[in-house]
Image 1: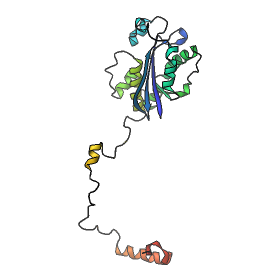
Image 2: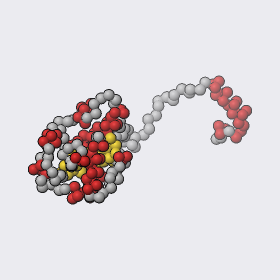
Image 3: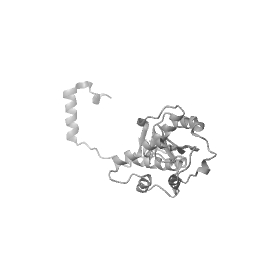
Length: 229
């Protein structure tokens, strides 16, 4: 199963107030585990960068001046996410910005039903705790040392780890076979079977065996499988 963990950085809180996306970050999951494939881009928002937003993510207007606009990256972005479910921390926030950008280019909006919101998951699994990405990472022992400021790709990677914890932990499968090829080759499959020096004592008593023989003869007759030789 393919899923995409998505995060955005923006100039503010609401696209209806003229705010825009300035960074998109995506992480691909396959069967709930990162494949190593990511998508990331910075975007020129064609507007100023408010001081409050710059404090959050550290992205300046000057840095974005030569970056592409959303219409230039839309095809690559949509191709990367495909039709996969989108895992998002606070999905309503990011989806309204992505859909606002899609609306500007005449694209179809992404339905809310396609999103898996890790905040809602955390509320159901961990009632009463704080649900910020930082707090959930601390709760699950996820390394935050690289997160001096928000960043879409970094936050998508952290969200992926939180998501994996919320669905039951990061162990993909129980390994009941040798852990690696070296261990596997160390086992000699041609060894002869071990023979017990003395057979185990029978579990049935003589009386039980006689009762069984009598039952088979009386109830099942000569055709019973126990009489086959």
